[in-house]
Length: 116
Length: 117
Image (cartoon, rainbow over all chains, first blue to last red; front, top):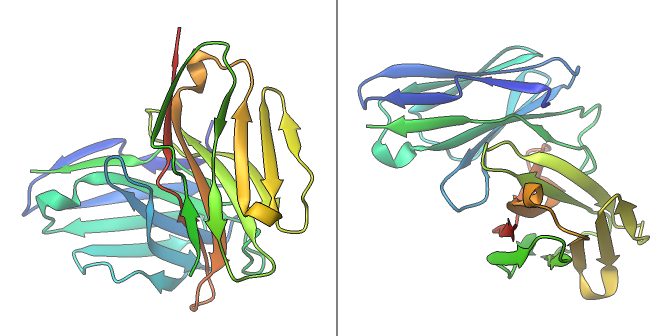
C-alpha cells in the first residue's frame, strides 16, 4: 500500500467551482510534488515543495494554486478550471535530505479530476 | 537536455511468456539515476527500481530483472514467466536536478503491457 495518501480519489467539478485536492505523507519526507497526467501520456511535473517552500513551478496556470501547510501535507487548490484540465493528478514525496537525483520519489494513487 | 525513449507503445503477450521492455536515455551528466515505475489501471505509480550510473550490475528481483548498459544508454526491463497481474503501463524515467535546485523525473512515454490468460 502506498504511504502517500490522496483525497478525493475522484472529483467532478464545474468550470466555476472551487475545489481542493489533498495529499498526505507520514514518511518524514521533506520534498513533495504535484504531477499531472493526461490520458495515455506520462506524468508531467507541476510543482515541487522542498522543506515547505515552493521550489519549482513549471509555468502552471494560476487557476492551480498549491499550498504546503506543513511537512506532511500538500494541497492543490482548483478554481475556474477548463475541461482540458481533466486529468489524473498525482502527489509524490521524497526524502531529500539534500537535493539529489538519487532520491526515490514515491507516488500516491492519484486523484481523477473531471471538469465539466 | 535529458530524454527517455520507450519505443514500444504497446506489448501484448500470453501468460507465462517472457517479455522485455526497452528504455533508451540521453543525458550529458556523468552521474545520473534511472528509475522504473509500474502504473496499474488504478493510477498509482509504483516504484520498481532505482539504478545509478556507476552501478552496471544487472539486478534481479523475483521474476523481474533489469539490464543496464551504459555503452548503449539502455536500461531494459524483463519480466520472466509473465502473469496477468503484470498488466500495466510501465514507465522508465531519468532523474535530474533542475536549475531551481529540486529533483524532477523525466519520463519516457510508457509501454502498455497486456498479459493475456
